Each structure stands twice: as C-alpha cells, then as structure tokens.
Length: 213
Image (cartoon, rainbow, N blue to C red):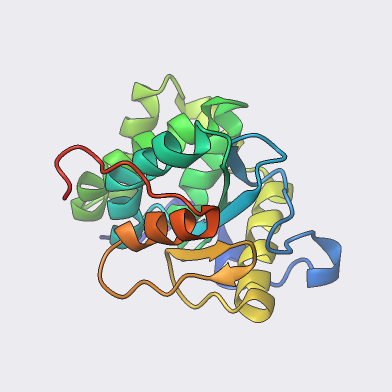
C-alpha cells in the first residue's frame, strides 16, 4: 500500500502521538470517551473493550465474522456492553477514524464498518488517497467534507493520545486487543474465544453462530 503523500503531511502528528499527555484524556479501560463506539445499554453487567484498527487484517476478520454474533448473543440480551476503541497504527487508520466521526452520530460505526468492508481494496491500492476518497464518495462524503474531516486537529490529538495511553498504561501492543471488565483476553486460536470468555463471565452458553459448530 503506497504511503499517503498529501494526507500524511496533514496528519503528521500520527507518527508522533505525544500532543496530549495521558493526564489530559480519560482512557481508563472501562471509561467512555467521545472517540468510542458503544453498543449496548450503559448498565450492562459485563463490559468488553476492543482496541481495533481498520487497516489491521485480524481486526477486520473479527469485525466481519464475530462481532455480530457477540451482539446477537449478549448485547441484545442486555448482558454485554461493547466499547470499540480506535487504535491508530498509521495515517490510513487516522483518516478512516476521522471520516467516521465527521459522518456523525449513529453513522460512526456504519462508516467505519463500510471502510473495513473494503479492506482488501484499500490495501491493494497503488494510490491509497484516491481509494479512500472514492469510498468516501459512496458514503456521500464529498471532497470538501473529506478535507474538513481530516483537518479536525482536536480529534486527531485525541486519537493520538488515546493510542499512546493504550500502549503505555493499558499495555496494548497490537490489534485487536480485548478486555472483559479490565481483564485481558488472550486469544490462542480463534476469535470465538471472545464469545466463550463473555459466556463464562456471564455464566451462560452463547448460541452457536450460523455455520459454526
């Protein structure tokens, strides 16, 4: 994937996420911040925190294949609240998160999901900026809105500070990373282990996703 020339300049702080100190943000594991997507009722007894990056193939795998099962088996039963936390690995991650936020409100996750559904296209693109702008137009984000979204310095600072704090205080070293009620889930073989861990915590057995044993 070719580097984003123009966007990398605009998002130069991504490479040095030290604009805000950890004390200036609220990134404790179970706290909710404007950067997060939250699925589930606020007082759900179990909280699953997911650190994710849209350019991470394993994150895309989890997003495509296991997240809906978690929602169906636990979130819709008011057992689980999922907090999705953005983790910036590169300029493309930052751009996608910023576009998702700018698209607004309930459409944050819809926008993020749409870009993640085009993971292979973005990864294979010779001109990543053009690919991102093309996908954005399919979401009714025109060039002006795109440029406005990625000029949101305050949100970029927030993303960078959150990534820095995830590394230094929470111990996140890669994505995806999962915590249940502040306890890490160590994935050994399959993302189905996330559902299994939630089920164990809840004292229940999840329904098997269609096509899964």
